[in-house]
Amino acid sequence: MVPNMFKSILSGGVSGNKAPKKFDNVCLAEEDQRCENTFAFVEHDTIYWCPLFFTDHATVRYDLSAKEFDAKGWCTPPPHIIGHLFSTDHTALHEMTHLSLIISHALALSIGEPETEIMVA
Image 1 (spheres, rainbow, N blue to C red):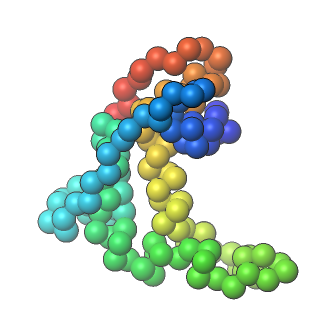
Image 2: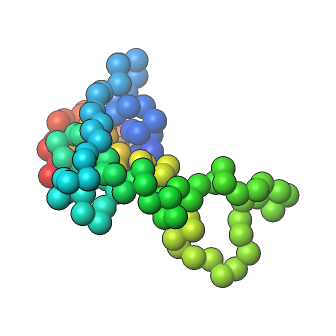
């Protein structure tokens, strides 16, 4: 299922020459209580981005471009801290896996069935 999830994300949730399906992105205000202690979430094929995603640079903005690349790659020496692997890209990719249009296509690819629309809460 995981390889098909990535295929679905890269294809925009469709097969062949069809146009990619659409989803919405909404930036929420700090006052929105749904944003308490979260960076982003999905409801009804809309990704909601919380202020913390854009302002908590110590946690969220840790990305590969901030690290020097050398012959050993981007890896840092031990101890490896899971929080150091967290990035804005990871958050966006994670939220896309919650979109029903992506899940539907990945599921269809996995079971070899024609695509059917599913609703994901």
